[in-house]
Image (tube, rainbow, N blue to C red; front, side):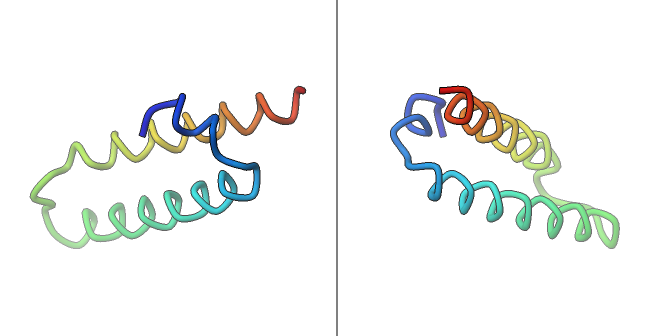
Length: 63
């Protein structure tokens, strides 16, 4: 998801998105520890998405 799309979301929606992404990340990280993942680059993608959401959330709080 692009940062422009995230900026259109409300702060409550951003918090929910952040929570969902963090849950997905922890599940994938756990699965990667148990067995080899088909797409290990997905972990990096999720980390970047979490960072984007966090950045936009900080922009809202700075206003």
